[in-house]
Length: 78
Length: 375
Image (cartoon, rainbow over all chains, first blue to last red; front, side):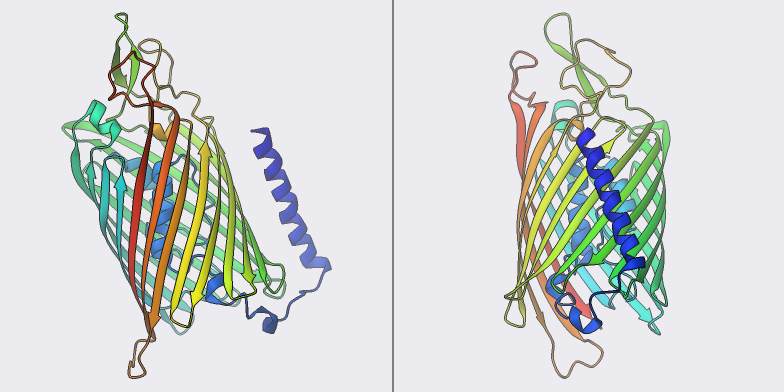
């Protein structure tokens, strides 16, 4: 439990650091620098209907729930 | 009903996935078949999803999903009879793009013969910092109605709320990170009305009594995801997630997934996932006597256990020059193999001294087949 709390606090600090960096640092990549990131191989949930179903399977067999992350557009499919 | 609690939660989670801002999802038609088989359960069925955008500003979507359940799991075998049932789920939603923000609203309904869940979801997502950063916020509200087959006087309710936040950050030309957090609260009837716990009797044997859960549950989950573009054009995706709740359950999982294109049409996927959780405060495989404590559970999903998944997928996309309204088509097949090992849930089908039965374990295979048209 303590470990979980520590990790959460670290995460929050990371989140705040990201946000604060938005004020002090300029964006370091131009749109044309992002070709690789736009490649379909970088989309971990390119098929939301299939990804959501697998999330549903995990949840049906586990107690853990929440923070599943993006499955791309709220399809309502599980 | 075996699935009711998780299905309703999945309804909330599935219908409320966080958006990627600035671009509406693609127009597509998905025809999907799914099958889960293992541990005495077989669940399969179709699902259809349609998405259509208008004027690059608004996108609507609708989904129809069916689970055909044939249940003879260990819980069912030791305290009930094998059964079959069907669950259907319908959802509709709309996304609205305004500048660098997307607002999404959706509604979902799930029905079984002894369970109904309704939920609404609102999400908003905003790009900023030169579009390197995306902040998403979401809220869901769900209402469950629980019934019990063969008992017309039984009717209970449960309400659920979800609050979620996600921050995605482009770090380098090859690396993206995402940090998410979600708080979920449940209030109402959270039991399974059919499930029992077992307790020792004076004769050295055991008997059963209905399980009793608290009427509230609050959980928090935090996830960190990284996606890295490998030099030979492949995507490597890692995820770590931690969880704890007011029932005393701690859990964590990690996953690695590789997406590897082969030529211009084929894609291979592989993933490995490991999960572990501790048990709930009020869980026991064998209680020392009847009504041993206020709350009682012997649900194996509330026990201490670990699981692993190994998954493989293959996809093929194609198009024809003479297709006018269709952009391209795709076919995908995934097979995932699950292994579950329970640390304090015993296989009481084995007749021996209570509390010394072998620990339970089982494997399951999940098959997914997807046909997609993009237009």
